[in-house]
Structures are given as structure tokens and as C-alpha cells.
Image (tube, rainbow over the protein chains, first blue to last red):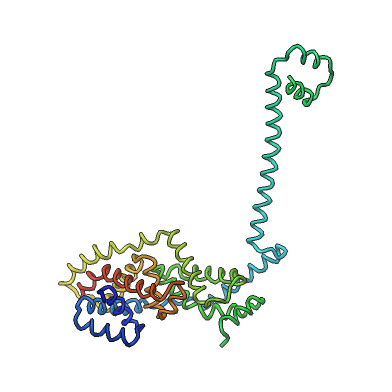
Length: 151
Length: 190
């Protein structure tokens, strides 16, 4: 068995997480390996020091404060007709997106119309279409488009 | 005493008293976990409160296929990690000033005055606390679970969702990393 594997067994032995055979292996290895003995000593020292970090005490009112926070949140949920806050936020976001898309679409339509007008104004009419167009009164955009397409 | 799963079922049915019982049962463990992970007791109250609020919000989706503690542990650690990122606490708790300056000062002062036990203990606590912050997060977490929370390997495996073999190897690597960080400090004092 290589040293790396035996080191793992020694570390597990320190936590009493080994079977009988591994315990025997660890003990016999520790008798001959100073590096692993040092590792075990240091790990024990660290355990003592980590345990000595102590504990923190929460205020007596902690449970009451948490309970108050969640009850307050429940009340807010009821105010929103039982909609979960996360669902509510998603709903608001989606509504906002729909509005933005609506405005963008109308803006695009206006821009497209303006571009068509510009395009048409740049087209020089040939004599036939000019004659046809000039004979008509109250030309609509679709009339003009038809004339351009059939030119 | 009512077991965790029964309490959770009562909470899911809208029993607020059951939630308070669950908070009382775990608040100490959560607080200590935050304290050791964050390296300071300053933020413990706020983060612990946030943990339990998040627990309450998530309980309707709790699946009864794992222990409540392992689930609670993940929520706590995620919040601690968020806080550490936000506050860049690692820089504040850097060991540099302890290993370089403090060691140098203690070397100079050694001849003049012996520190009292309480000062020594306090200094050692700071050094160990700071060293824990400098460990790789996966090493720190597993050492806290093993040495501080005294969990067995199978409990750690369930909590971290890793195999038993991975627990063994990670604990060994964590101990080695901590040894490398602190060997100089402890050799000076022995």
C-alpha cells in the first residue's frame, strides 16, 4: 500500500471512522512513520482549537423576530390576492415586457410608413404610370405602392 | 419530541407554532455555522434570520428524501457565500497581518513579557479563525462539519452530497492544508 493511501487511513483513524483491519494498519504505520505521527498530533491540536472557537448566542427574541418576519410576509401575500411574491414579480415583469413590445411595434410601424413615403418620393415616375396616377384623385398609399410594383 | 419531518408537514399545513419549534431546534447550530464560516460574530444574527426566512419560503417545495439538516446546511452555506462575496470578507480577514506582523511582534516581545493565558487563547482563536477563512471553501466547510459540528463521515457525505471516499480524502486534504498554514505559528509556541 502506498503512503498516500495509508495517510487517508490514518486521518480516518483519527475520527474513529475505520474498521478493525484499518485500525491495525494505522497503528502499525504510526509506530514507524514520524511524518504521520506529526500529522496526527497537529490534527488533534487543530481539533482542540477549532472546538475552542466557542459558540455565539442569539438574542432571546430571535425566534419571535423570525416568526414576525414570516407572518408579515404571509400578510403581504394575502394582500396580493394570494399570489406568491415571486409569481407577482414575474407577472409585473411580463406585463412590463408586453407594454414595451407594444410601444416598439407601433414605433416600427410608423417608421416603416415614413420609410415607404421617402422611398416613393425618390422614385421618378415614368410617363405611363405618371399619366395613370395623374388621372386619379385622392391617391392612397396602396395605389402608389401598386404603381411602383407594377412599374 | 416531534421529528423534523412531522414539523415540516405541520408547517406546510400552515402551523406557525411548528415553524417556531423548528427555528428553536436549529437556531443554535445555524448561528454557530455562520459564525465559524464568516469568521466573525457580527453578522450572525442577520444572516441567521435570513436563513430561516428562506427556509420558510422554500419549505413548500421541501422533498422528504434527505435530512432537514443537510438541506438547512446548504441554505446556510449559500447565504454565507453570498455574504462573503458581497463584503469581500476574505481580504479583511487575511492571515497576512497575523503571520507576518503578529509573529514578528510576538518574537520581539517574548523576552520581555509572557502573555497571559487569556490573551494567548484569544490570539490563538483569531489565528485559527483566520486560517479557516484562508482554506479552500470545500476544505473549510468539511472541517467545520467534522471538527466543530462533530458530524460523522456518513452525515457529512449526506450533507455535502458526496461519497464516503470523497469525505475521507477531502478531510485529509483539509487537515494538510491547515497544517501547512499554521505549522509555523504553532511551532513557535511549542
